[in-house]
Amino acid sequence: MTRKRASVIVTVCLIAVLLSACTQDQRPAITSDLKPLVERILTKEEQDKLTPEEVLELLKEGNERFVSGTLTSRDHSEQVRIAANGQYPKAVVLSCIDSRVPVEDVFDRGIGDIFVARVAGNFENTDLLGSMEFATKVAGSKLVLVLGHEYCGAIKGAIDGVELGNITAMLENIRPAIEYFIGYEGDKTSQNEEFVHMVAEQSIRITIEDIRKRSPILKEMEENGEIKIVGGMYDMNTGLVTFLD
Image (tube, rainbow, N blue to C red; front, side):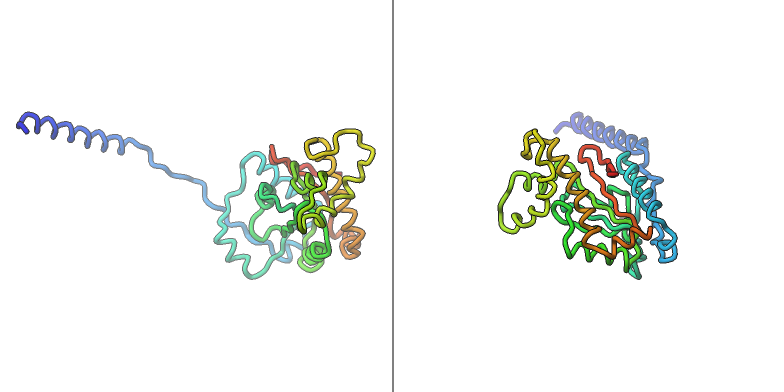
């Protein structure tokens, strides 16, 4: 290698190093002012003061934040440690097992905020009724929410009469909602989104009626104004929960 060529190579390398250093110096530092929020876990006294109407409003406000993409930043590690000594959740949500319905996120709730019970098709049975009675009568929650969702596979399976193992018996819990529309003149298959939506909503209403019929504890608590039992539909496309009348 000639001296001239070596000198050129050295010069090019030096220029590259200088340019790199200059670029790094001019690059803005990546910082964030957003800090995790360590929410104070609800105390028994604070839970007692809440009304069912206030809890329902809190869930609605949380869903608005979820839809707008302004979820609360939480320090879950800290909340885990704080919540270890006890829990006083505001509500119990009976939801489908669908992985596309992240219940705590949907309502912008953190650790210790809500009980979540899940079963495909979000219907009630003895075990779930017992869980809801524990959540309200024993643990003090003020709201029971039956949360269904669009495009539910369990609803579609029940409509199409799917038979497979224990799934067959499970889907029978949804059949009353299908039979409610015996006079419906449209296509009664899972391909008809309108029919699927109608059955999903009716299944929520039937589940709420069955909760009141099958649980004297929850029925009495509702009549006394200690809790509310409500239903809602989650829209997969928007993230919005529409609460049923």
